[in-house]
Image (cartoon, rainbow, N blue to C red; front, side, top):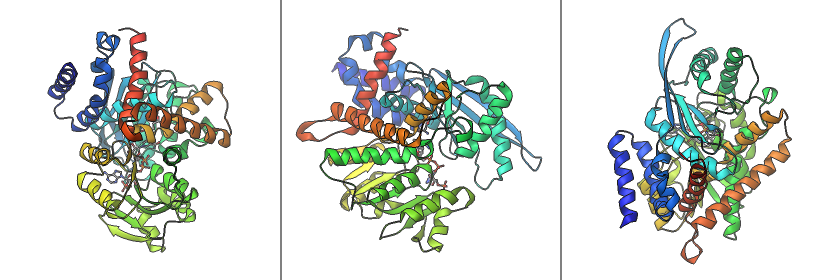
Length: 447
Ligand code: NDP
Ligand code: 2IT
């Protein structure tokens, strides 16, 4: 079958070249399965070898970050920027600082980002970057010194119309501030070269909240589509960072009962549901705390369970919002057995391929991150627009725009992912809808 052979041919080409890059191959495999039939049915896509070109990053930048910490010691870290695809606009995507960062992780994130950004409807290409630097337990001064050294290398490769990084794991407002300050000092100009900036220097209202809020706006659209509502549903959330906490906050505002948060060390469980006051407290204090969840447990906001994840807790809805491959096959089985009917990803690729397949086989609602967590980068796109116009729009206007963008992404997924008996395969819908936009942009621009 021609269809099959194209899949095999392209995937084995990548597999041979990048056999040690498991996360990258995982992300590509998931997308290829859905898009190959569309590719095979379009002679232009085939003539321009679109799929192979779309799977390979246009450019990868590697640099060594040698820096002197606040104790006068030299430290050496690795830094990368993967500029994956610019057919739709400047490369756009976050920076991650975490000891697990390597080229495979950044390549998977950059690849996913292209499809996500295409879904937003805004003119943004896809990229991702970061470092194996571990900021945990570091002084504020060390964070600043590292960010400055990292930017000294990165600055020559980015620009408001070239490549616009933002935050991701362990890169929030503080880090973006330090990175931006160094860029400005070196280049002597204001430009929207990073998003997630402080409100006083070109940042946008609602950017901080956008990924988590957008996830819940997507959930609202799903609920509307199924004639149900968030109100009264029990929700488990993993993670306790930017995405998890803002998702939890908005879910509670919509009447959901959020019973868990988690981090790399364990789980906070509150059977009667976290209050918005508790979540707001966590948002305010998380950056100054070693373990915000343990502190919440000490303050009677729930119980702390060391080394546990949330997936064994009974729920209607699961929102994995921490990191890649955090929800595997066994977890998926437990969630299904306990009656979970919706899984929406706040993180990037938190469900393994096997977990995804189980959700789809059982015909529960499963939404991949490239659709449901696109609110963050969408607001980044709106921040770029505000920077280009030298203005700052009101929070209420931006929040409404975010809601509309998420509702539109939902519609795009439904129109491409609806299969027999009304079931929506959101993964297929998201992959196909974004692929068509990307492929058309690439064909129109030739080789
Ligand atoms: P944060 O750094 O704010 O929070 C990350 C959270 O995930 C922390 O609670 C952290 O726990 C936990 N975590 C990180 N690594 C692991 C791990 N290996 N195992 C278990 N828990 C882990 O990051 P964000 O909230 O910004 O990002 C979370 C996810 O959302 C990521 O997948 C990111 O790519 C994705 N995302 C982020 C967007 C954004 O705008 N920020 C946009 C779209 C997606 P601990 O503190 O113990 O390390
Ligand atoms: O994964 C993501 O979409 C992000 N980390 C946000 C990227 C961005 O450019 O705002």
